[in-house]
Amino acid sequence: MDWHLMPVLTLLYLFCFLDRGNIGNARIEGMEEDLHLVGSQYNWALTVFFFTYTVFELPSNLILKKIRPSIWIPTIMVAWGVVMTLTGVVTSYYGLLIARLFLGITEAGLYPGVAYYITMWYSRHEAQLRQAIFFSAASFAGAFSGILAFAIGKMDGVGGYSGWRWIFIIEGIATVVVAVGAYFLLYDYPDTASFLTNEERAWILYRLQLQWSDNGNVVPDTIEFRWKYVWDAVCDWQVYLGILIYLAMVCPLYGISFFLPTIIKDLGFTSSVAQLLTVPPYVAAAVAAIVSAWFSDRMGQRSPLLLFHLCCIVCGFLVCLAGSLTWVPGVIYFGVFLAVLGIYPAIPNLVTWLSTNLAASHKRAAGMAMYIGIGNFAGAMASHFYRTQDAPRYILGHSLELGFALMGVICVIGMRVAYQRINARRVDKLVALRPEYTIDELRAMGDKSPTFRYMF
Image (cartoon, rainbow, N blue to C red; front, top):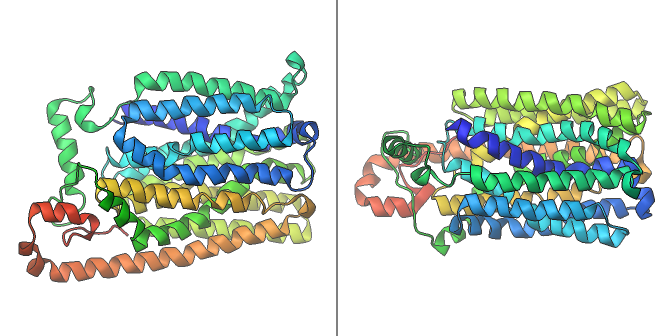
């Protein structure tokens, strides 16, 4: 099953994050000068992406529940590939803003959609490894983006276009090509997958039902859509605490992905060397994400390793601050390296943790879109953390990232304690309550069912 699903999903997200973050590479290849960007205009070009990205994530996930994933996901990918290609021919600041707004609309559905899609195939005790493999594409995109930008930057002047324009054009065309292939390679759900036998389909579906209980009681999931499940997600406390934790990690994520080339260049390196120096942290982070996910799945717990990764982020930005205050470029680079090692393993850990604690499937789709969508608004904030006037030390940016990471540590501890207490209460009350409910009533209750156990 892994070989039929994960390579395609990982490739899709690689191009998604490549197209989202390549503006950072284009910046140091002359984009600001050609478009006459001044002051905070570059930062606002980053920010407007998240306005539409945040708004369209929930509608996109609801559409995914209505339309086959093998149709919807490649379609939005074709759309953002076209937008990315056209970004390469913008001639003004306002043209860049419009392109980024449309990129937010078209990319909005991929990450929450695929994160939800994985939960429809894998149980919560095995999902994090797959989420990590999928999300590792973001790390590889960061590494590949630097190498690709280094190579494409040499095309400066070809066809009368600057090198930064070719970064957008070539990567956009490649995205469309991959999207067309995805129409033929992506499957929908286990009950319709052609590569599975009837026995394999039945076994996968049974395991997905059994995962919500720790005592062998099957908690059936809902099939029909009801707006009640969307409302349940809107009213669920764990979604909002999850948003705070997601904010704590997405601020550092976008601060790094948008500004790492600039931060490294301001340490005294040329543009070409800065592009290449972005590669090692991302490669190491991709490996760390997969190794961490493997251990987390084996442990059957999410919060311990999530806390460890958040502490890595905290330590990384503390080192960055120390290096900036004393101006030791090597220390700053090491701090960024350490922060990246914490960021990229932490996000699939959190997404898996929160998604597998939401049931039924329609509530999960809505809840995931909410915390990923609202949480990604952190990207709009992070777009202004590293300001031009703060170069080259970026004390403000590093300090803000540190503060968000510390908030994440506190919220993760709070969520773990809450889950433990709820599970303990349900164990005490299960024997008395269970005869009162029918299977249909348990189905409708989702994660509020007395047989449901939260993973922590």
